[in-house]
Structure formats: structure tokens, C-alpha cells
Image (cartoon, rainbow, N blue to C red):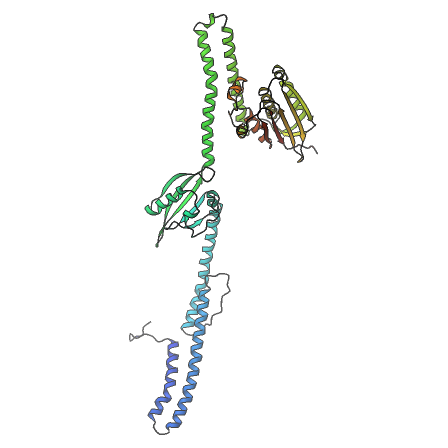
Length: 459
């Protein structure tokens, strides 16, 4: 601020300091001016000087104390939880500064509260994201990551400031971020993390530019379930095509044989027709099983769940398969089939038991035995087990036997008319009733399939 004459305006603090200084040197000037009575004037000047020193010391201490209060007040401004000091509002420049700070404080608090709220909102959004988020600086050191990224990358020690290469187990993501930092261009890449249960991620990496340095931000979307579904669809189409191709080729071949003169072959034409009929029955069974499996997987049953008497279903299934068992010289027996009920869909439950007993008969040995037992276990659930003393299942095949079209012995399965869908239907039917199915088997000694379902109680 300037005066009219172009000279700087004098502050009140400066005026007070000048006045005290002039007061301190006035006795000395007077002593020099008046040579007579110098001793008295000297003592008077000394006393006056001491008084002025005390006043100057108190004035300087007051100014210093107020400056410290202002400094302390300013230092605590970013901390919203700390109570504010009451500043002295004097009529000088420090008082004006104190009033300006007190006017500014509410605006700063509003701005800081807004920033804190926005930061909390962003952290909540990032924490709830299923996609992994990772930010690195120009030196490829971690500056931020959310929980989804830590879970997906299996790096629990990942913290800010740690070099990414020390904690990231797969080099593909590191190399991608390195290219983004160096080029400053956004990149998109599909990365398969071999060290993380063969999971696949779609990664979108973009540069993060700042005034000081360049970094990168990566968003990882886990597409493993979608990729597995695609693979299952491809395998399913391939398996269905393969299953239909063999009987269709057989039917076509024998039909052409009959048309090319086989109808006049009285010795073989009946056998040709029987082969055509057997393969058409096989095609029909495959189609029926596919429809049943599709209904179970869709989860849209035609009927509402209802109580099912387990003993009644078991006896109906045994009566249905009794002629087949007798033809294969297999003995069917029941043991401990108590009066228990489960909640579900009777048709699907019967289909599951029918498939288990049918497999136990088909993959048994001559004069073999199949037993069915239904009991209540220690947890209050109903367990229905189907055991046989047949050929058994190799240990390495057990985890896959419930897959569609999976066969342990392909040649024998086709020979006995299996479609490869029976156990998959069993699993889906049981899961639809909130249950599970497990198997215990030993090669050459037999197998035991156990269905566990929640018990229905009328009380």
C-alpha cells in the first residue's frame, strides 16, 4: 500500500517500534545537547533507557506470542477434528491477519469436508468393484490398488510404494504397464495368469499424467467364468455332434445297404433293420436326456415342489428295472429304507435314482448285486445310497464322471447303450432339490453313489 507521495504506508506495529526507539535515544540526545548537569541527565537517560528496554521487550514478546498463535492456528487448519484457538483481534496488522484467517477457516473446512467425502465415496466405489484396479507411478511402483486386485493377483503384501515387480507373480501385466508408461498410450490386452488357477483377465491400461511424472492405471476384469462357459459350449457342441454322428452314420449305412439290394438278402435284412432300430432308439434316448438336462439346468420345473416319500420312489424304480436286472443276472435288494420324506419334484427325483440304478446294473458283472439304502444321517438329512459290486471306477476318473458325455469306458458305455448324460442329470436333479451327490469307488470292487437331501418334516 502506497501513500500519496509514493512512499510506503507505515504499519501500526512499525510506528510503535519507531516511537519506542525514539524514546530510548531521546535522553542521550538531551545529554549531548546540554553539557551542564550531564551527570543528572546521564542518570535520567539511563533510567529512561532501562524503562524503554522493558517496554520494547514486552512489545516484542507480545508480537512474538501473537505470531506463534497465528502459526499454530494455521498449522491446525487441515485437521478438522482439532479445536480452533481463539485469536486476539487487535486493531493492527496482526489483528487484521487473525480476522482474515477466521473468515477463511469455514471455507477451508467446507472444502476439506467436501474432499474427504469425495475421497471416501471413491474409496467405497473402488473397494466394492469386482474388477481389480491398480495404479503405478513412472517407476512402476504401486501407488494404489483395491481389494479385488489383491485377491485376484494373490499378493497380500502389496502396499503403496512397493515396486510392482517384487509382488506381481505374472510378468505379463508388468510388461503391459511398462509399455503404457513409456508410450503414454492406452492399451487393451487379454492376460492369462498362470500362477492364479489359470484365470483370465481383460486388462484396460491407461496413462496417468501429472505435472511431475507419468504413471499408469490398469482395470482388470475377470473373464474366467465366461471363458469356461464358452469352452463348455464348444465341448458340448462337439460332444453332441460326435454322439449323433455314430448312430446316424450306422442308420444311413444300413439303409443304403437295404436299398442297394439288401432287401432281397433274406438272411441279413432282418438284422439290418434291427441295427437301424437300435440306433434310432439310441438317438431318441440321447435327445430325451438332452431335453431333461436342459430343463434341469434352466431351473424351470413344470411342477411346484412337493413332499416325496423316499421309500415309495425307491420301490417304484426297483420294480421298473427288475426285468433289466434279471436279464443281466443282477440281484436287486433294499435295506434300511425307512419312512422318510424329502421336498422336491418327484419326476426328477425318480429320474436321478433310475439313472443310478441303471448304471449299477449296466456296469456290473454277471451274478452281481445292487443294493439301495435310505437312512437319516447324524445331521438330520436323508441319504439314499446305491451300491454295487461291479467293475468300479478308476480314481483319476472320479472327479469328471458327472460331466456331460464323459465316459470312463467308452466302448463298454456305447455297447450297453449309455448316452453319457445320466450322471450329469443326477447331479442337476439333486442340486435342484438343494442336495448333493458323492461317489466312492474302487476299481474292480464296485461303486457307491450317495445322494444327500434335506429332510422334509410335516411338524
